[in-house]
Length: 418
Image 1 (cartoon, rainbow, N blue to C red):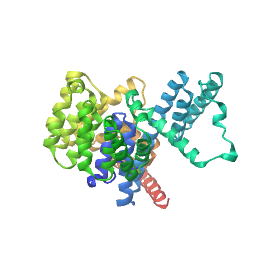
Image 2 (image 1 turned 180 degrees about the vertical axis):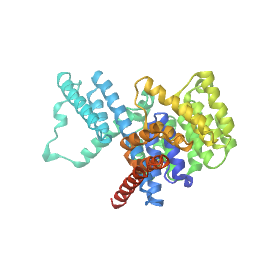
Image 3 (image 1 turned 120 degrees about the vertical axis):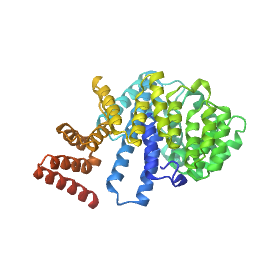
Image 4 (image 1 turned 45 degrees about the horizontal axis):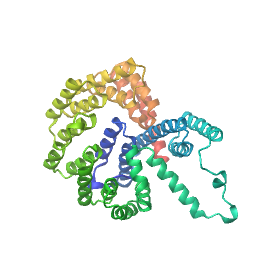
């Protein structure tokens, strides 16, 4: 599924960067959609860029794993609340997302716990025969409808309670459109959601948000903008809508509109990390890099260090050509991870290694970092091995330099054959 597919002719790099921002906010669903859109565009425009395709595929896989972890965690809470059917739906969705053997075992364990719990404490009012239809009278359409109900329930279960209640009350047209939107069938989504909005004229504000997303995917930015604006009149604290509206304005260079929009963010959410990121990214999009750096620095000084804000500050420093300062920031972030025993993300390791390499710090430590990255991030292994080769060449070890160049070449040739 591609989100905002080919919207405004966005470049692969722009879409990937937007996905990276969502990922740093742990908004895995939005990040996954951005990466998928970037992958679709790259496959269409430059299918020969095998390494970049692998990078995006790996990022998508990571988002899927994080989504699976969230679904499994929510399922565990539902099991504790004896909501067996809802837990089972989330576990099914998690199982479809993950490829991690350990997570699959955890999902299986939770599934067994669900089955055992339901056997000991069945939910009231459910007849066991309901789940055993007469095969002579079985209707496949009923099975499809039941599956749609399960998928709809699993998607809704990730939403806040008031939103869930509204979504369940909007009727069949909304359910059809919402499921189509999440499947990437945007024509069907727009048609069904438009019908749902007409059916719920007084309570359909949430429908406007979903319909706006469908319109964006279809390239109807005028209608999408109007729907987002209308939605925000009812839910002025809904920061995701501000983000999507800002993206429309950034892509069309309507920066004054983005200024006005950001000025209307309510005081109640004006000091949230998401709001700070919007303001900082707005300055970045306007190429006001010095102002963006000052803004992020002030955020950290006034409200404390936040890893997402700090990463954005490092990004701005890189854009300003201040590589040494950016390196210091990434080094501090890695130190925080190691200090508390957390795993250091390959993204941080690569930034650390690449900036050191660019600054001429081609030490044994950097060489070992690239070798470690080749194991953790195999999609980019050829690039890492070429860096290893360059470091060996700088130290006069021509034999090892040639060896790692050959290794990188063999991997690339293997990728092309596959």
